Image 1 (tube, rainbow, N blue to C red):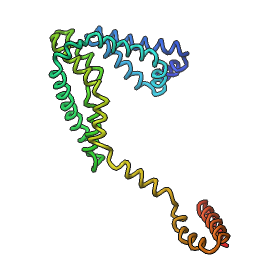
Image 2 (image 1 turned 90 degrees about the horizontal axis):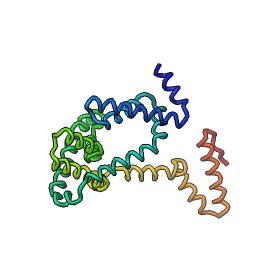
Image 3 (image 1 turned 60 degrees about the vertical axis):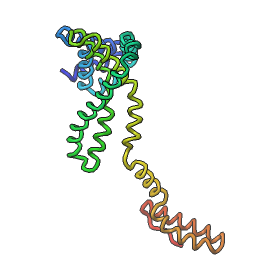
Image 4 (image 1 turned 45 degrees about the horizontal axis):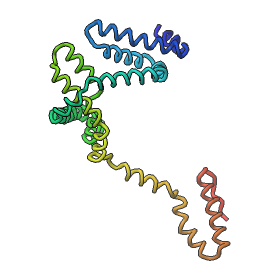
Length: 251
């Protein structure tokens, strides 16, 4: 049944496929909101279900829904911008930056420990270093923090001041994310990438056969130009013969 449904969905035209995907997302969003969860949670579950159902279905959904995704994303950030107060952020700049730093350190530590425990079983040398680089990327606050803050304010768990503070912290963390990645590359660079790349290039410049033939060529080229040309052609033919598994042609 699932395979037939996948085939029927993939055979739909572009407009009908987009309509079916959006209807599925809206249906799960309404169901999650009716159960007491947020609309965003239902849309998130719809994306997970589509991605886990079929790889072809997920790739086509991503391709077909690129336009609506950009529209909804712009509406989302526009609505967040209407909530954020620049005067509130300026008056509470110290508190916002301190919470951003505390959140970064907390998420860095919470992400490093499980990643290090998992990586230590496979990577024995650079487990801690790789885990720290990966946890650094995950240390900023994502867009879902806006949803959680709005839901907490709607339920009455957060006051107006705490809600605006969390919104400012989330916005500041997203704005500082590119500089956060830049600092990571300065503090925790990739180990041995340039050395390995340079060694591979230097080793691939000259083959072992021609490296062994270079002293002989130099000795032969020291007699006359004609003898040097004959020696070069003979070495090239010999190297080509050895490279393809043919016997070398010796004069």
